[in-house]
Image (cartoon, rainbow, N blue to C red; front, side, top):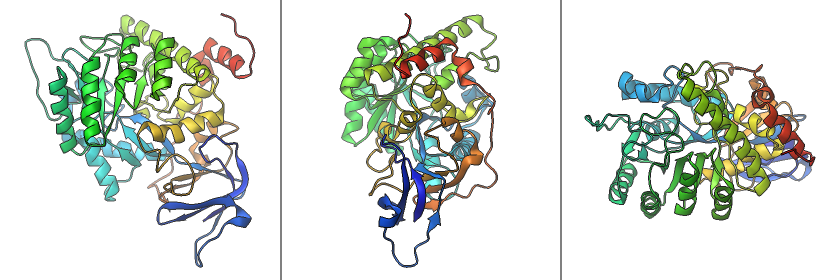
Length: 443
């Protein structure tokens, strides 16, 4: 039982003072003013006066098999065994937990590492967040994850991409992943900057192929998450019925409207799009890549700000913050949102309630309400006043999953606290702040 706190419940409501929680058997039983809370005899009572009670953070799109030691994902498969990658993925799960994220949506992994790490966490073998796991990303020949030349084919159960061509192959691949124990399916509707045969504005899977994935997954009660940068690819995914999509920096007005109308949740991954253009990235010496990366980041900044204006549902997703070479922290994505015109409370909602919905777990996670799982952060300061409070891990007083305190093996790491998001955004931050205050913005 928690009492005496300042409650941010994740629903978007303003913080409430002197409110507490009763958690029993992993579930929230009661949320109310301290003088109205009831509890069984012998219940443990934790007084958190002066602190903030809020839901655990959720990263709706990450990749446990990515890591900073090998940023070139196309080389990762050639230079690192799937067994070693699985061990590193389990260590990444701990790093994510240290950030204050109690749940993640793994958005694509080599083989079935994601489901394996999920099961290891559930069995208490490794320490990590709740994991909603997928398998390899479904993509077409010459698409996102196809790096092989025309004279060579590579069929591997340990690959990050599962190559499919046509609806029949898509359906077969979905069924194979169901057998591998996935919680959801990941499809690629576009390439990405750095792909050998495609780029971010090249479409990958077709509408018919994405629909096949959505329909086949639905037979088994699963949802589909999409990789989509290109303008038309975004529309393809919205019309096909995916639950959420990431990046989408080249979205236009029609695409945002389709996403809003069809309830597709937008996870922009803008912090990663910015990081790719920094000198520490492995492709930073390629001038053509740097131009493409910077253009993508500029487009993402405009898209994130515009999504708020049109009322699109938006969630926090980092594309694997633990691999960031400058600030390995998912809260960095939240800071970008704030400096693009979102209020801290809106961003907290994007990292809790909406992020839970983006991974199809909104019924049990994301808000502090009776019947939800007791995943809670107790913060020494008020992140609704300043979101950077969450980046300084010394402010995380306690962290609960299912009402049980998470005991980390050492102090939480703090990295990149001097990184200035406003400076990174430049003029975008200035324009967004005017939008947030209702001032007019010059064209």
